[in-house]
Image 1: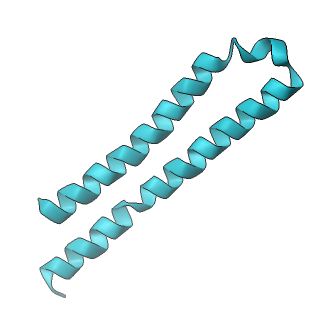
Image 2: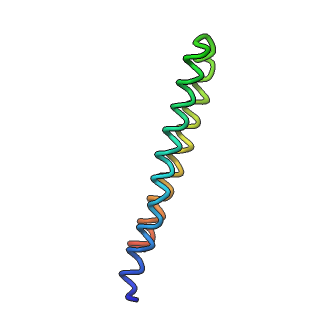
Image 3: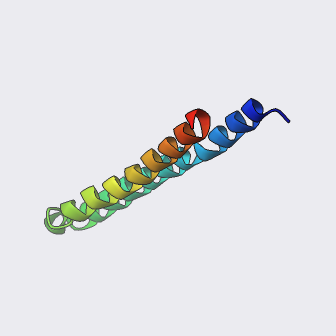
Length: 74
């Protein structure tokens, strides 16, 4: 197998983490909305946890994109 083809395959596999991050963000927001609809008075107290969960899920997606770029151009 050629080196360029192997790099492209590896970069494509590395970007699968972005799909996982998208699923994680959906789960975080879905669970927050479920909890907020059940107990609206506690929703404002949990907003910080929502933002933290969103940031962590997105950070892992960005890390997988950086790894893909490192494989392709490194």
